[in-house]
Length: 210
Figure 1 (cartoon, rainbow, N blue to C red):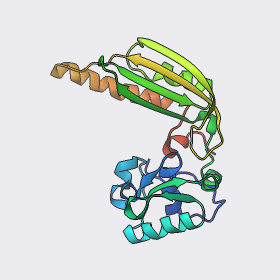
Figure 2 (cartoon, rainbow, N blue to C red; figure 1 turned 180 degrees about the vertical axis):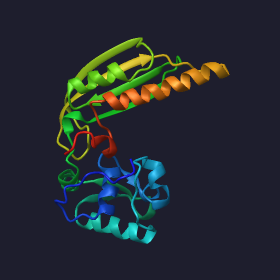
Figure 3 (cartoon, rainbow, N blue to C red; figure 1 turned 60 degrees about the horizontal axis):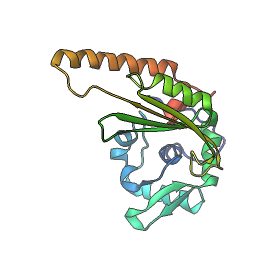
Figure 4 (cartoon, helix red, strand yellow; figure 1 turned 135 degrees about the vertical axis):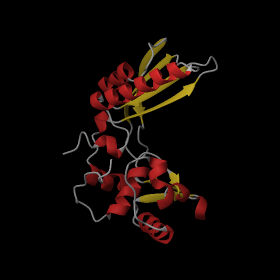
C-alpha cells in the first residue's frame, strides 16, 4: 500500500500521529519499534511516518499528555498503549468495521503440525478464515465462543468467536518441488486478498471503509 489510508479529518490528530496509532490500536509497543528507520519494516503497512527521534518523543509525550496513549514503564523502555479515549479518536478517523475484525496466530505443535487460532467479532468471519486460510486439509477443527472477550484491549468486552485448526505443512522439498510450492503460495495469497471478508491491520481495513 503506497498511499496513506483513508481518514475522515474529524480530529486534530496529525497524519504522523494517526500513523503511530495505526500501529498501536490493538497492541502496545516501545519506542524502538516506532522509530522512523524501522517503522515500515516492523509494521509492514506500506507507509510510515516522517518523525525523527526527537519529534517522535515529543509526539508520544503529547499523545500521553492528552490521554490518547498511556505509557507503561519508564524512559526508553516504556510501552505505549492506546487508551479508550484514544481509541475513540482513532476510530473517528479510520472508521473500523469491528464485526469484520479478527486476530489470528499460528504455532508449531510438538508433533510438527501447524496450529492456527482465530478470534473474530462475528462467527461468519471466523468460519470464512478457517475455510480459506489453511493450505492443507485440516486434521482437526474446533470452534467456540467466549461470552465476554476483549479482542482489542481498550474496547468493551464482547462475544469472541474462536476457531482452532490443525494441519500439516510440507517442510522439505526438492528444488523443483519448492518452485511449485512457491508458485502455489503466490496464488494462495492472491486468492486470500481477493476473497477475504476480514481485516487485521489498517491497510486491510481499506476494503471496508468509505
